Structures are given as C-alpha cells and as structure tokens.
Amino acid sequence: MSGRAIAARPASWGWAALGAGAGSASLLLAAAPTRWQVAALAGLGLGLAALASAQPRRVLLGAFVLSLQLGLVLYLTPPLPPTSTGASWPSSLAIPLPALAGAAAALAGGRRDWNLPRGLAAAVILLILTTAASVPGSPVRFIGLSHTLLWAAYFLVLVAATRSLREAADLRLAQRLLHVTLAVQCVVYGVQYALGASFTLAGDWIPAAEDGLARYGGSVSTHPAAFASFLVPLLLLVAAEFLLAPRPAGWRLHALLLGAGGATLAATFTRAAWVGFGLGLVYLLVAGARRRMLRTGRVWLAGAVLAAVAMALAPAILQRLAEDHREAFEERWALSRLALEVIAAHPLTGVGAGAYPFVMQDYLTPELADRWLWVVHNVYLLRAAETGLPGLAAWLVFLCVAFRLAAPERIPDLALRPAALGWRAGLVALAWEMLWDVSLGPSTYCLLWFLCGWMLAARRVGASEDAA
Image (cartoon, rainbow, N blue to C red; front, side):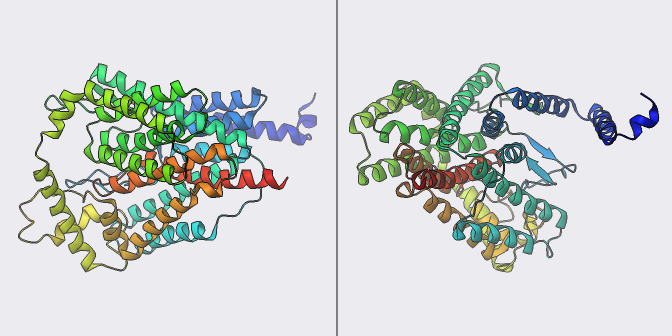
C-alpha cells in the first residue's frame, strides 16, 4: 500500500498518534523514579487484565478497594521540605492513588444517574469552600491550593465508590476485599516486626528505633498512629459482622480476623487507637443490643479472643501503659493552647490551609516558649486554626452527615446492616483519635470517604432492586 493511500485512511492517523503518545510516555517514564516505573507497569498490567477478563468492571472495582491500603501518593509537584515544627500535609499538589484507581473503576461502571443527598452535598461544598477561602490570606498560598485539591480528590473517592458499586454483588465483593485488606495488613505488620523496619511501596525503608517499643506502619504509612487509624475501622467492620449478623458465613474466619487484627492493633502501641477501638466496640454493643441484633454467645467468644490477645502481648502492653501519660498530655495541652491563640487571632478564615507550621511561632506566649513546639496534635483545632471556625464547622457537619448516612434502617438489604453499624462504630473511634493526632493519614481519609460512598450505594442498590 502506498504512503498516499495510508495517509488517506483516518485510522492510520489514529494509530500513528497513539504510537507517538506511547513513545513519548515511555521516554518520560524512563526518566521517572523506579517506584513510578513499577507503578506504571502494574497499572498497565491491571488494564490488560481488565480487558482480558469477562468482567472488567469487577476487576477494576477490586483494584480500587485494594488500592486503599497501598499508601501511594502521586506528587504533581515536588513537596516542600518540612519545617522544624512538623508539617500539615500535603505540602505540594498531591493525589492519593485510590482517587485515580476509583476514577478508573467509576468510568468502567458506565453512565449512571445519581444524586448526592442534600446534606452530604452541602457538607462537601462547605469543606472545599472554607478551605479555598483560607488561601488568599495564607503566607503559603500554593500549599492552600494543594489542600483544596486534596479535598476534591477525597470527594472523587466517594463519587467513584457510589458509581462503581452498582449491584448487591458489588457491595459484598467490596466487603470481602476490605476483610482481605485487614488480613494483608496483619501479615505485612508481622513481616515488618520480623525485619525490624517499616517499608512502603514507594521504596521507603525505616529501621525501628533502637530504644523503646518497636512500632511500624504496614503498607499504609511509615507512622504507626496512621496505620492504627486505618486498622481500627476495618477491625470494627469485622467485629460488627461477627457480633451482629444472624448467620455469618465463615464465622471461624471472622474470629481469626478479629484475633489477628486485635493483636496487630495492640502491637502498634498507639494509645489513642486502643481507646478509640474500645469506644467503637462499646457503641457497637449498645447499638446492636438496642436494635436486637446482638448475638450474646458471640460476644463472649469475641471477648475471649481479645482477652487472649491481651494476655499474649501483656508485657509489651504493660510497658506502654507504664509510660508517663501525664507528661504526654501536658505536651499536647500546651500545643492545643498555642492553637487556641491562633484561632482567637483568626477566627473566620484562619491562617491558611497548610500554613500552621509556618506561622505558629508568631503566636507563642512567654509561658509556651520553652515547651515542646510542634504542629498541634488535634485535627479539630488544626482545622480551625488553618481555615477558621467555619472550616471546623464544615468538618463536623461532614462527620455528622457520614454518621447519619450509615443508619442501618435506611439499608434495605438486612445482610448489610451490620456493616453499617460497624462503620458507625469506626466513625466513633476515628472521632476520638482526631483529638490526639495531627492527621489520620491519607489512606485512612480515603477509607473514610470510600465507606461513605459504600453506605450511600447500599441504600440505593437495595431501594432500586425493591422497586424493580
């Protein structure tokens, strides 16, 4: 065939453009760090597997759910170096991997009409608007824009979950994969404990501290507190299905997951997560009993499993409990007092999203000047300091809406109602943990928004099937 004949065919131009694009992408990828070369090849392999599968939508949905635990973030710009007083993440334009995986799963789900509940839509809009409103007065406006983009990425996770979970089978697949995620993280943490170092898929390798208790971050984070925050909701989901489901399939497996997850959570030696899990468990027992869903026999079995875990790890747990909790509380209270000074000075728009570590020293009082100086260990106060009291109100409204979204009475499928109470228990636990740490970590936030989308889909899928 002559060159003129080839040029006359539109398809030839399409293939030529595709080849040129692939070649350009290969050149850019060759100059990228090794971890992103591996990530790109993994994504290509997943795409080919989805195309070859009889159910490509389910393959992409599974990849979306499993990506929640990978702890990978795509940095569109180089992160700024952290200050000597910590950081309010992110410090650059960053998109968590689950947002990208969710976008692929949502596109594979095809066209679908959907509307967010008014309360949820209003809460999300308020979160984004109050974050954006803090940017003009920020000394680091670029970081403020990065925070605004991050909230949009989290919202994308929720939308993707709602769009990709189209059938009851999809909901149950996601539920099973969340159980798999818990099991995988227990194994990863055990491997890190054996190796004596945390590692991530981005190539980070962090040896454990030589003094004190060894603590790791799974594949979720390099920080044990962020890992524990990710673990607690998953563990409470398993506990809810074990304690509340009428006839749970594979109850022995649930008991094993409860024991393994409890042991892993205990081994993080994160006090806020321990208390948060306890509060979530109490909520689960009370809410289940009020709705007459609680299976008393399994309560005793679950108690026996968790007691056995506590006894096995008793020496290390007692060592952690023997530390000076009063000193730790006084350090955090001093940080909170400094945050209150910042809030009092900027009650409406705050100092700017992500700007707190850059300006906090300007608000030191004489009595706080000689204290430990770091970003405030309280998500609520940090949000108020950076985006003002309206920003804090927007976050509290979102949490309340998420709690109401998981009302089990609104889910037509009776088999999915225990998961709704489990997620409510997870929110109770996370609400407590946010009182004691800077952030839950991007993986936990993605899990939070994904489960909100899961609950919304559970309400709609059951209603649409009943109508049909």
